[in-house]
Amino acid sequence: MKSPSEEDWTRLDKAVAGTVVRPGESGFGAVSLPFNRRFAATVPAGVVSVASVVDVQRAIAWARELGVGVAVRGGGHSYAGYSVGPGLVIDLGPLNTVSANASTGLVTAGGGASMSDVYAAIEPCEMAFALGNGATVGIGGLTLGGGVGATSRVHGITADALVATTLVTADGEVLRCSADENPDLFWACRGGGGGNFGVNVSFTFQAQPVTDCATYVLLWHMEDAEKVFSVVQRTMRSAPDAFAARVGVSTTGPDAVVSCIGQHLGSAASLKEVLDPILSVAEPFRTMINDRTYWQAKNDLLHETAAGAFAARTSVLTQPLSEDAIDAMLAMVRRWPGGGNPDGGGAALFSWGGAINRVPAGDTAFPHRDAMFLLSMDTSWAERDSREVVDANLGWLAELADTMAPYGGDRSYLNFTDPDLKSWRTAYYGDNYPRLAEIKRRVDPDGFFTFEQGIGS
Image (cartoon, rainbow, N blue to C red; front, side, top):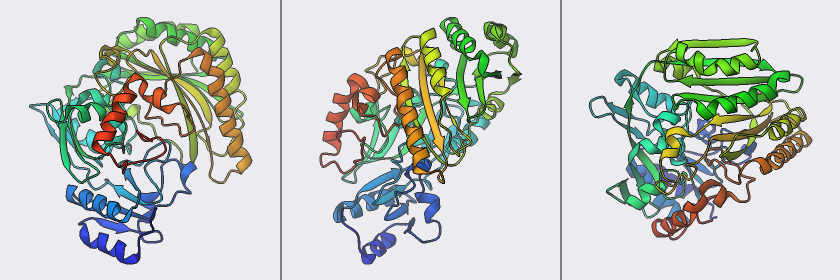
């Protein structure tokens, strides 16, 4: 990759209405640091925070002319650090305007809009679609990777609500993509991943009216883990689509907590009926079940992670984990090697199915349309931790994933990107990968948009 001269950077700065910052300059860290500090050593040569679609076009033209690699940054939350790179980062953060039309249900968000931006626009309209529960997560990455939230069993994935997206291609062309315009590219943008086909500068979604609902938080000690995991899985077999659950076990070393957290698109009274088998098998040491407005529920489920470094592995499950699988998983969690990050390590099952599975696997690039759960396994450490601690955590996670492999499938969730995953093409995309690769060759024949797990790489 060519190293641009000072004159080159000055030329870019003059060409765009947005801002260009370099290492050491004020504001550089805010737009260049990866969310996952595991990849903090990756320092861009420069960041352009674009103020318009024209800025995106000019940044791409500049990078192509000089042979500079490009990374696209929306919310910056890529688990694998793909929101930054050693060349030019195109920061979409300023493109964060969101408009919502209560009469049509259409919501249009700029490519740099965050969850908080989207929620602020849709709440006055009393409408929503499946969204994430991290305030700073970008709408672009969430949508392009599929997007699964607490209401997905009713509303489908985030990408299912997408009706149009506009992107800037590698040759600077601005393309609107929908079922009627550039339909192949529209298909690819619903689960094919960000940064592969161009820079998505806007997204339009079809929202649905919201209703009041209920949320719950149930916590147990580790000795109840086997019973809780088993009964939650059995409950999900017959639970209504309105019910969503995340059952997990997390440890920080000396302590471990088992939790079941979720949302129900119904009353607290009806939620208690669904939860009764779970509450009966073992008494939680903490129980919260409350009627909520949709917006209160969104706040209840808001998740923020501690700063630091982490790694995650996932497995898409079509069947519940067996008792042997649960025992093996819990035995591994008890062996977590420790680290300085208060997030610790652990494993969790997210309830999928429902409306997610009522879309054929080939209708969008998101292939996981037969899943019952997503198994997520994760570990974390502090930036100050030694190399030995880091290696121990990564080794533990790899062993946990290997331990669980016989009980699950060989598929993974793209939005929990795993840079250590070797079989990522089939794991993320299944039978949809060949079509994605063909679209990539057509829209970006020179492979301008490229990264380690990029389509076509």
